[in-house]
Structure formats: structure tokens, C-alpha cells
Length: 112
Image (cartoon, rainbow, N blue to C red; front, side, top):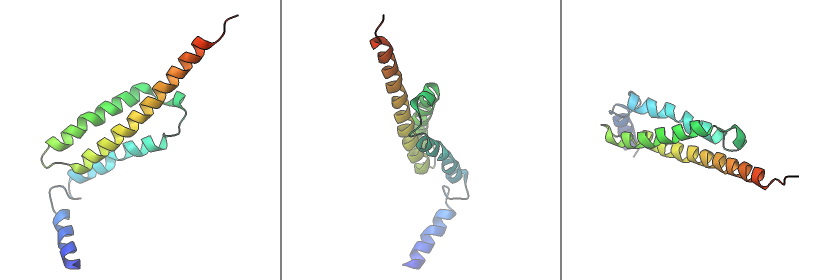
């Protein structure tokens, strides 16, 4: 069993998507985007950039498709962009809900 795993491991290491290629390291480095989104998860919505969140959601959405269209397909990159688009979209929704509540508070404010 151990030798079978060892053989599979070394086959992967030397493959076209293994750690000796950019098909491995580029997606690994891209994981810093969703890590940052997790860090911002409880951030004050007033400090979340609506424009940046829109860009990151679009970027990850486009690159999800690209990750499956390149040869060899990069499932690591696809998963990273799926996770990132989900997290950045959630941050964008928090910002939009906060803006909506601020607008509603202004409209409901009594005038003297």
C-alpha cells in the first residue's frame, strides 16, 4: 500500500500539474485572495470597498471558466476562484445591505 501511494505521489510531483510547474504554484499563491476575504469577514461594512468587491467577483467568475478551459485543466485554480467569488460576493452583499440601511435611516429621519 505504501509503495502504491509513493508511486502515485511521485507521478503527481513530475506531472504537468505537479509542484514543479506554475499550474500548481499560481493557484496556491492565489489562495491569498480568499484568505483576505475571510480576514475581512467581520469587518465594518463601511470599510468594505464596493468597487473592489465587484472587481474581485467578476475576476474570479471569469477565471473559474478559464481554469477549466486551459490544458491541463487546473482544478486547484477553479476551486480557489469558486471559493473567492463566494466570499467576495458575500462581502459585497454586506456592503450593499449596509448602504441600504443607511439610506433608509436617512429617509426615516424626522424633520423638524
